[in-house]
Length: 195
Image (tube, rainbow, N blue to C red):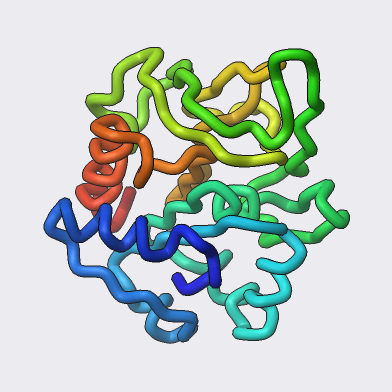
């Protein structure tokens, strides 16, 4: 999905390295008919939601039935809202994304490699090792909940991977997370339509 985010090209290249054909679009009908949808994003939740509203995608995205993957800000947009603004988001996932609290040794934004703590099995995480390192760049995060598949610790536990039905979200950047990120993207490509 063309969210205007700076990670559009890097995600497209990552999928193409895996042999997938990608199409970047903000057209609602094209997105609704896609086999899989990725919601990328870098930046502010309020700006991203304004772009989605302007293109009519705020009505299209929550109704999707194929596998959907939100990446970084794209994951945050799946939640009910964000403290950034505050901003109403897509309300696919319950809860509010909260600002990270800076602390000694834990500056905000959180930029760098952190370990995944797998909490329960999911096909998206098939073959991903417990404590694998992935790359984060963010200032807001979702709390750990029953939807959390994997968490990480950055001055406290936060959701790194979430799922509800056919919607998955990853707070980190799989396209910048080496072999672990590549495996997760490959797993996403292999999810069948029924999830």
